[in-house]
Image (cartoon, rainbow, N blue to C red; front, top):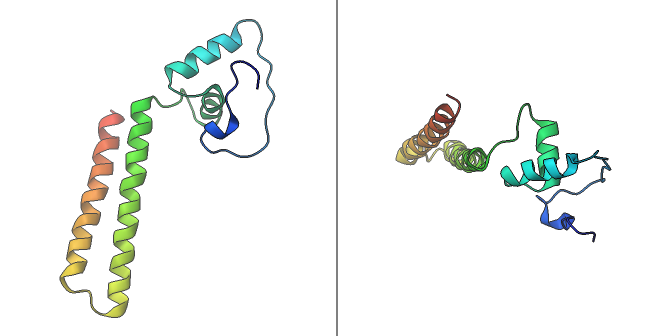
Length: 118
């Protein structure tokens, strides 16, 4: 592997076809510098820039996204539990607990994104 290249398996688990780009002059070094500032590999930086509007998210924004995904998965699990209990006819107080957990998770996500987007 050439100097400065990263092992593809160390990237975010992407599999697929490679893309060859040619950078002029100091463009490659400027791109690498921006990628490092965003705490991303050059490959991930270019993909984030190409697939999003504006600059790629900074490490704090990515952390918030990951937290949001975690909270949404918890919500999904809670909703699944609610549906199963309702289908069995044995929901009782457990449905209220699941609804409160779901509401709390949604509020966490909403609060995090509201603070970050101001």
